[in-house]
Length: 100
Image 1 (cartoon, rainbow, N blue to C red):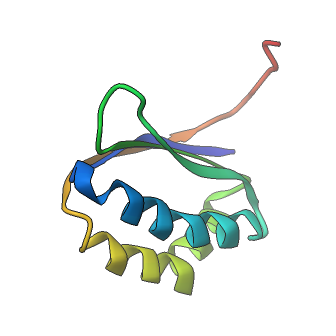
Image 2: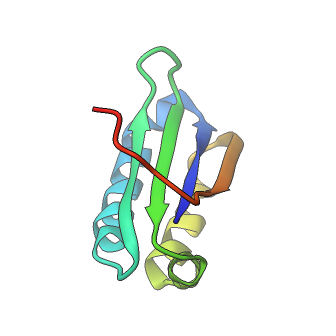
């Protein structure tokens, strides 16, 4: 399994535009084969910061996602959000156990 996590920082005045851009990407991605979960969450303490979290069954599934039309639309749209930084990491997970 792959986990992708991190942050996207953007102009706080573009918050609503970011949410509008994220919504169709999340909906389409959750329907992709090999996706386990996918989403963006606004930070409650840092305006303009969104947390990213994804889980994928395989590298191949994530690769197909990266080449999808909805991902291309998202990447173009990001250009209008005043992005000031990104820090997103991919983690390869060999084992996972439930804590609660």
